[in-house]
Image (cartoon, rainbow, N blue to C red; front, side):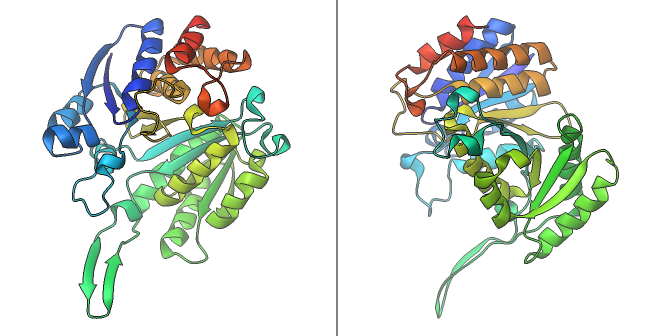
Length: 345
């Protein structure tokens, strides 16, 4: 089983190295380390080198750390680290991003929200990844006689919507059998199409209850009544924003994993946090989001459900036993937190 490791930028290489240690504890895998993001720009002039993409196409799964940082943070630059991430998702046909958000009972005080708002939260975001504003054409920036002008287009096709919504229903069928489809159907034509197709798709899953929520209302409910949600499915930009908001429920971005999936078993797995350049190289990054991403990799791409569950259980026990990195108010280093998880495997 071949896994491509894309450390990327900032704390990315540190947390990917931690996850690799955990993977080595539960199995034997072949690894191939490649560049993506800012480090790839420095080395090759592009955020997604051809050799990186070919390696990923030939792998069973891809584990990524993070991309970006102040060094490459020029909005006028033609080549940016984020292009590597968007490009690999598109090239591998990874159309759905899964982001589970579960609040650990021992971390109830870690969230800025009151414990009664976060207790019992266990939801799953399914975000469409390859359509919408981020990939719309044309993209335009120009100067006009009356000032500067920019254009982005939000486009969705029927098949793009149907496949991600159907995945959300399949996942909900194995959970609490509730799907909330988030859109802006009172304003956007693309959202009206999204809602229409969600209704049609839902007829194939009569055991799953479908409800609709406008994105602004969903944002409010995430901080007021997140326990009411089971599976939330939404388009690309809405999902990008709402999942970062939902991370607050868990207490830290460093805790949360994600999986980007397509039609086959191969997927791209990464923590939802960024490259955190302010702490890069200090050895204090929280590795649990990446370790849990590795667990998702084992489950969804390699079919190793038992090993995935063991890793998740080890992380749960480590947190229950009081192990904390700095983002959670503790003092453990990245390596100490990783050792604590491995000791509980």
